[in-house]
Figure 1 (cartoon, rainbow, N blue to C red):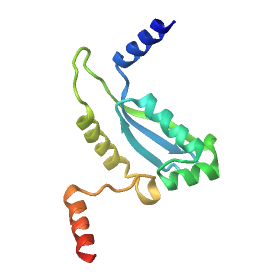
Figure 2: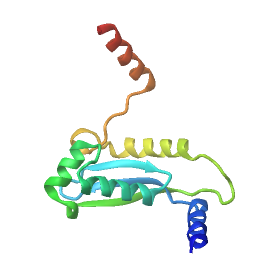
Figure 3: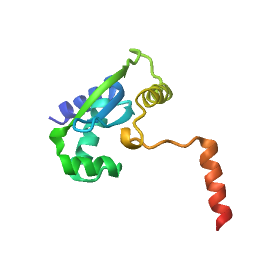
Length: 135
């Protein structure tokens, strides 16, 4: 029994996980949250769990979920990145570029969605330096 469990675990760890871009869509307002993942089923499951448990890090999304209910939201995979079989490679940079393209296309910020504008490294460093000078 233990060896079966170990083999299943090993098979899972070695399997190619679907990766790509997903949306959480508010069907009432058509607002979306855009995300990327190297494990789409795992990420979607995590977001569903966090929302259901009331602990999602995106407070605006969580508030709408609480108010409207799960039945008014849809989880969609909008773009997949196919891993090369037998090639061990880090796809995170490609996923970041793909996510950036979807963010530029959908612009899910402010009233249009749940994403928060990410600051560039230079802007982030400028803000940190400004906060340090103020202290």
